[in-house]
Length: 113
Length: 115
Image 1 (cartoon, rainbow over the protein chains, first blue to last red):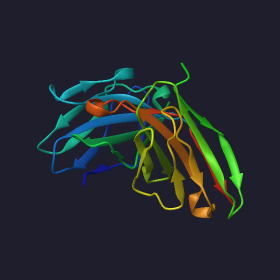
Image 2 (tube, each protein chain N blue to C red):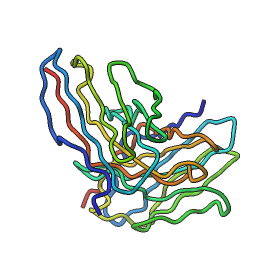
Image 3 (cartoon, one colour):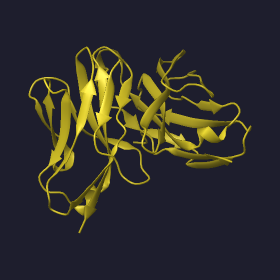
């Protein structure tokens, strides 16, 4: 079975600083990878996804993620964060051909002015 | 576009009471699912459905029932509420079949407290 580990439960950063949110997965088969964002008191929205092809994926709001098959990682990055990026971020994995999306525990990103 | 609509947004129950959380989507998505979100545990799948008349269990199905009589609706029933079911519940939908890698669309959640 696949699993997802988000290595940091909370990440505080200063405004305009770069940020990296880490995600590692385990699976014996090929997977699709997703990052979702949850703003306070809202549902989840898709930030970006990796299906195949280029390992660097660009998403909305200036975020990007890199798929590293050898390290089984899919870390999320942004070169310069804004106050509006304050949210909880979830990494998720879907095994090829499967229906069930498996989520990590979430990382709460807090931006300090 | 309404997307995924969940009702109610908030609910307080007493232990032992029953209730149904409603979920409806207007995107003609075959796949629908229910998750619960608890601090430090991410989202855990309760039940899911790949089409009308078909449901299956997820990671944490105990204490919950579902049915899927139409493509649009996927209600979640708590037969006898327990304090351990205090959580935020999210419904999600997406296309299925060969498009299983399509992103899920989430509702805004139902915040449920069991006293």
